[in-house]
Image (cartoon, rainbow, N blue to C red):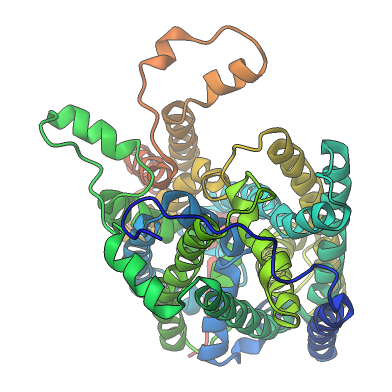
Length: 562
């Protein structure tokens, strides 16, 4: 073996058969599902109102909120996709994005959180009605509902990857496209239905406390994978240390080219996914949107006892992103070295399937079951939070305004529980479509797909929230409509979406649009939000709020805790 250059390969079959003691792994996986379902149902016995369903009585400890934020962020796409990035890129450049997530969370903690607590909102889009009017609230909530269904549904299919890999190992035959679709649909429907059951029964408390279980399983499984990888690399720790010393593993990259002009370097930075500039600017704006304007993420922060505890949970979760991202990227890099040293002709071609393949073929009995449970844990953790947030937002922003039912009316709670299943069905449809796309386009990478979806709309959301929080006399429903539309149009153009659709439809592309530079996904929210803010700030706030908004403001002020 020669370190620092081409590694000599050691061929050999996987050391652990998929069929060995499979029953033990299945018991571990079954115990996980039973435990999570029991915890969710147990909490559901105490929820009697929408306030309990959505906010949990604002009684959740800060450390549980922290664990829930981590679980929501670390989806199955992260569990398999981030090692896939490390396996393919063999560096830590993806990790620099975490710099922006920390900066963004600090801004959210001190700019966004307190006003939400002051107005005692259930849905954060209620704040926009107080600030601008009912139209902005409706538009923002609708934008969230559509985007969250698409984004959460798109990453839901990832947990099914492990089943597709398992099928190929058991049968010795790579499943056809049709068989893969059946496998994916089975996993998608099973995970979604089970998660919807305990989420609808237990509400946000079930989400938070099951997230604590799921984040523990996820991190425990990831650390176990690193230990097994190090032990199975010939020479163990000393070999890994030498590999680290002799391999260039950059963590920071500028995206610029020495000798290139300013214009060319700016273009290079904007079209690169992982650079320090994307971390400091693009990732910061993205975090402002995901953690300040997304009901899915903010709702769990509102379950804390006060805004100070909420701030603590949020900032701590940002600091936790660094070691968590490092762990999952390290898994991918270790997998790269491992399979250079252990040539395996059956290794999947998709980088996102490599970790699942290793789990099923190389992990010891018991740990194998823990890792598979970890994959489903990450998927269920992010899914349960999304379902609860979608049901809460739709119930509060649309159902209650239409029916005039109070949050203490039993019909309101029943409606929220039923909407949980409605959104579960919509996510199954989106996940099924995403599965078909990925199966038909095996070269696609998970992370850009998942993170790219909300980039088209969350910039518009962030722009309106920034206008409401940073100004007192600017903005109106009409101006916000124009700003949000402008923000979305700019991103559609900067991502080349029109020509992509024409290409897929076998239609001639628009030559004029080809001259517009195509920005990478970390920059989408930033450009969308700044465009929205620039347009919406041109309009003054009406001298007197609309009657409905005034009444809502009065109600919220009365409900505010002293």
